[in-house]
Image 1 (cartoon, rainbow, N blue to C red):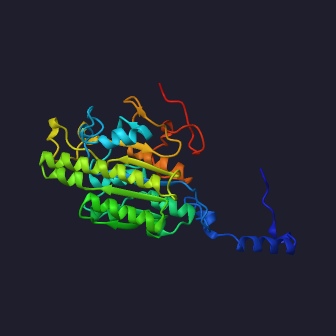
Image 2 (cartoon, rainbow, N blue to C red; image 1 turned 120 degrees about the vertical axis):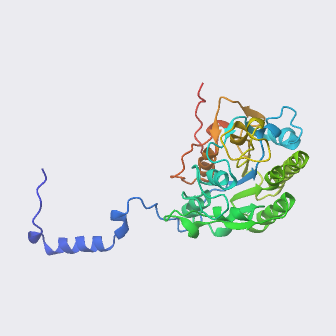
Length: 336
């Protein structure tokens, strides 16, 4: 056993050296072991950019789950050849707007109020990104139709929070307006990280008018392709930008009440769309039903692309959709 030293006999110079060293320490580093590492003092983030596009309330059976792809023809004919589709992507948490979007952003299932009155409990991608890089607020955005989405700009986590939140542009009168505002944000602020949400498929679904719901899916599909075309045409974004297209939730299948609502664990509510596009993503690829991924995995995937940690997320990077080259994402063999 190591013996305790009698400090009374230490040379005075050694005592002085110890006192100087202690005085120079950050007192919190000795005790607050759960505190995240200090943020970067200068902008030094990856050149990669990420846009997550959520089509609110798109049921898989009317989207990529329809073998004719009649309502998502652009997604199938234009986007799929350039990227990867997951045929078994899921929301396995609360299948509502706010919890669904929160799962995408935090990598955790969030049982938060669906009216926008409650922020997520776990940090969002915006907070992870700005904390790690020192990026300004204008480098991360939420753009969407539903005003309540503003509650997802930052979390209640005391180690992150409002100081690392996203800029917000919400409350648009149509999905077309959301697309226009998204393009304006991209042109004006050149952000590295954006969550955009097309809200009107969900709103038309709740109207219980079947043809209105289907027509809105077609509109969202066209707008989605236009967003990808813009990202490929802008020199700032072309070749360095990933677009992930998904949904916050689906809708009830016919056995559980039909398309006009959602919110349970039926297949219609949990089975959702996912398309990934961007550098090093496999092209013209469909990953089949045996490869199950959820919204939680998207947070970790975006973190890896941007070169930032997402320590409180529960998912894992979706490495199987990437070519084994320069993304920094670890490509591992698929499970049999």
